[in-house]
Image (cartoon, rainbow, N blue to C red; front, side):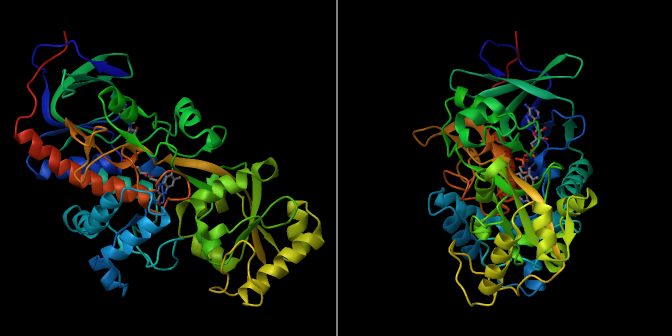
Length: 474
Ligand SMILES: Cc1cc2nc3c(=O)[nH]c(=O)nc-3n(C[C@H](O)[C@H](O)[C@H](O)COP(=O)(O)OP(=O)(O)OC[C@H]3O[C@@H](n4cnc5c(N)ncnc54)[C@H](O)[C@@H]3O)c2cc1C
């Protein structure tokens, strides 16, 4: 993994735009670059693309879409922008947040209208920090379904994707202009291709234990729930080329990954009135601040575990999500007729749990305020039978990355842009600010789809300007 500076001859083949990674970001980049008239090559390390996009819930936030209007949802880019900025406590890149929120409806219209992705606006539940229902998803609320749709669109557009092509090195000149990419095939064979513009769509560093230990030491021992291919290649290449990285301690966690099965509950079981207790049967947090920051709160409990308690309404709402259906199918979600059954399942003192349950009921009825600051009054008290699952906290994906401008061009520390390097999705700095508490649900695919579309079009424009001369390896 590195930068090769020793080259001279023209590369053959040569593509105006090369994209590394075939997740949501890479596919959107390729589609946009192709539409803007560039020949595009996508390099993907897996034999079949199954990046974090395919593990995700496939939910993409956007504001002011036709789909929302059809569903009777009144939303504006300003509302989404404010939600993104408020969740990150104004510590994210506000200009990028504003720009992405403004672009979000156009991206959804483009995915649906131009590329046949079957999205609809969701409104049966609302994630923490979403002051309007911003989410859009394919029918199964399943990232694999979303990625399959995107890959079909790429195939229909006749864009070249080389799979089982692990990009290992970039060729760059003295000005950090990337003129080619080297990739390795499973049989060890090495191939090179030239480019005028390169887009890094190869996600973050959650799958690289050394980088996690360095940048996010708190999560060094946590289960990583994203794709193993998130090795931090974009950050490593970017740093070697003089790029600026920011918010490297930032990440999306999840505080309800069922253990030992390791699939996550749909967060709707919390938003719809559910809560978490520890091994003593006591609540320990405001669960609905966000699923991301909840990971660390759960990991701080004895043995790093907690129990999520919810009811049939929360369960059925969460069953819309493929991961919750997986948790149910794995037998991770148990039913408990009474508080005594709940206590027996947890192995905690029944009187302690009975007090916790009674307190939450009083909070839901408005008769008591929550010492952790959560407002339970929007939902009726949980109804028996209770549903319960043992959970832990996990790292889903990193949010720090390459600083980019509004078109995904990678920036140096002085704010200038590198000659022809772009990044999007998990490869770029996210919108979450410096830590785990700033992640607004859906920010991952928001950045993957929007920055992908914008970077693809901009990379095509740059390639037309003939930004790079053509070289090859010696
Ligand atoms: C369990 C889970 C649930 C999530 N749910 C949601 C959700 O509902 N909504 C949301 O917005 N976000 C969600 N996220 C986050 C979201 O999945 C990511 O932010 C998003 O998919 C990132 O897209 P991407 O295209 O940047 O990366 P990816 O989809 O990971 O694609 C990157 C691709 O690059 C390839 N690659 C990596 N390195 C190389 C290399 N050197 N050479 C060639 N190819 C390479 C990888 O194999 C991969 O296919 C979730 C994440 C997880 C883990």
